[in-house]
Length: 118
Image 1 (tube, rainbow, N blue to C red):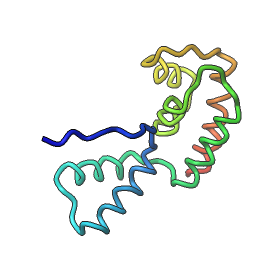
Image 2 (image 1 turned 45 degrees about the vertical axis):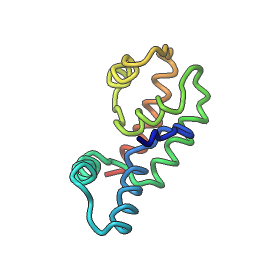
Image 3 (image 1 turned 180 degrees about the vertical axis):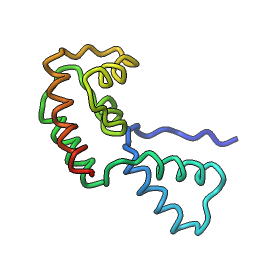
Image 4 (image 1 turned 45 degrees about the horizontal axis):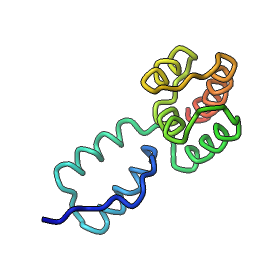
């Protein structure tokens, strides 16, 4: 039996996943059941384009918030919390503490992109 080997792990955003599904769709011409369901989910819950997501990730990284890792930032970008309480709920699932001042900075950056989205 073949044992796949994980070479590297990197969190990807919903926009990146959409791009990968489109690539698979072009290559295989038809998606299997699981890929089809994933495409349906991605189309319903993708709020920003790939370029906007990349820009938002860069801005959040430039804030230099201690203990905030790449996978936290990707999750924040996927959900786009509009309030400090929403952001606290997202970060509650991780063992990371972010100060209220930094939470306000993150929310203000997200609000800029959420307003551009409309």
